[in-house]
Length: 192
Length: 192
Image (tube, rainbow over all chains, first blue to last red; front, side):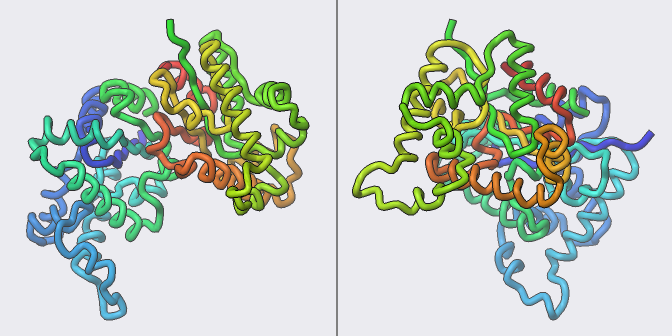
């Protein structure tokens, strides 16, 4: 049987990662999120913190890399993108699984057996969740969240040439704040 | 019991209207789409063809009305928008139902009991469907479709100040081309 993949893109604090885990558990398949980082580190030889930060949540240099003159060669981030694409493609070749983040939807776009999901929620609900679940400080959490989403959106747009969070780029988009994580996981598992 | 409303926004040819009917049938409630036009005509005294064309699919003058100088008063289209808002709000007050198109999601946004849905599909699948189901001519169907979507998007953005087809504006967005109409209807009915 062909491997079937579910990719989950998500706004910060929307619970997309947790939904991914719930879906994987329901279906008895693996869910890859932060595990991806370790695999990319092993493949690329790049530093773990660079891989972590240089990806979609890049805290430093993410914007300068977009502006870099590519006629003189690939940036470090471009190399990271290539390793990331390889790791995600290899996972998809190896087994059915859920992959959270890292533009997996775009990387696997040519595969017919891929269900692409986007999870979002109201900023207030996301902020409350980020404080509760990820231990984010309450002051300015909305500002930090906005910043994270901005980075993810810029990263996605730069490497995929598509708009992050636009409904037509995904098979299913769900408001986890309104529907609840469990209901979202149920629907995704059902569509698999 | 409070009335519960499902609003369906859709790309041209995505089958959103048919999905609306299927959902309504499953739930034993009414589905309003072209019936809205008749109600708005009755309420407003405007001509039926104007109501039909002056709405989101406006064929003539839609753009000029956006550019019109509103300091000298409301345009005909603004009046139409007001009547349309009234008709939709009254329906929502009267009964649980499915409402297709006409920015009902925005008009009813303050209601907690409203499930907002956006249906989209790959342009090729939509074109094939438009030819098959609506008897659209095959020549240039993609061009006409693009034009229709552009009008809907402009209309939506003008009156709601939100971006049409952006995932975060809806509780659920579904790709009917990939998932199939029946599956979409099932999910929506299940979330109700």
